[in-house]
Image (cartoon, rainbow, N blue to C red; front, top):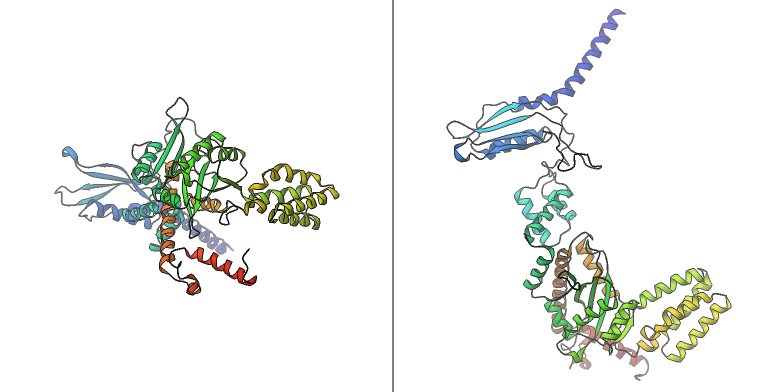
Length: 518
């Protein structure tokens, strides 16, 4: 029995010593790792060797002190654990909630110094103790994930072309699977790059410098009695040329959450003969008032060299300030309201006042017939039917909403009136919405400044212009097999492929109706 007790005691003691060794050995192991008589030809060789050894054992070393050897002093470098020293508050002595530190006063120190004959470097262990265990992983340790010069240059080049940081990180991991860089470090490199490009210029100074450098047409408006810029309007030079060539239809819409200042960004877009959307101009406005919109519209009008060729159609949503501004600034231009937004609003009110049953679907079908009515008498007949349907079911609130909110603007969206306007099928502001989506995809977040949003809009506009020029070339140099018939001989290569398709659709419709054209 006593023999069994002795065995159990020895076994337990062995396990205890083994656990104790496993716990404290990592703390003293570095001392033995760095004791050597080896010389290093260069300081960089010494630094690389030391850091490779420490990282292989899951410790991170950083430079705590160094001297370049100026004025006859001996050149040296002292390396310490990343947890060396103690946290010293920068301004406020009280700790701020959410802040933290990794400093624990770790005493580990290595010193690298030139040899007496100045032909190399030697290493001395000043203190080989770590008062903490080795890290389980070096992921998340700032120095371990530091970018070298080659990787940093690669990230900067990608930042110039608006590659998202997550894709930059994926690219680094693909090139080097052992890379420990985190997404926060990628963001830091991009931020420092943008700051270095701007230099000592303020945000607005940098923006104006870029606008002048790229030969943009731009206008600014100051706060009354102040030199503070309140509104800024800019247009890409090639977009101005397109606007003078294709001024027929203009779509305007505001988007939000594009910068940290929360200013509305008014984007004005048009369409080309090849059915491509191009951005005419961008404008940051202080507020969405009639006066602000009038200023933006006057800036847009000044882009057209021949004032007799102002836009024939302008498409917007139901912004009353914009409606008023357009009637004052563009009195001869037909103003259409976005039919998609109208139908969306009407459907929401139908669900609120009528319900979601089969009768509600019948009401919406009747609304669609009302909007699509080709003539004014048919429009009025459908409206009477819709009103009676709602009156019969005691749903007058819905009919009142349609009448007071939308039918007062019926000439701006009902086909009985809009079919008499050459709008090239543009009855919604979807093109502007698509342009907003493309811009926000490049911006990635709404925390940037005005200069950042300009950079994104400039890249987006230049890319669009390249695609538009390519569409012009395709129309002139490519011949669709459908249009090789003699009927198209005189216009092939002189009008766009989109136009030829529209003509062919009309030709097919005419032949289907017995050769008669209505």
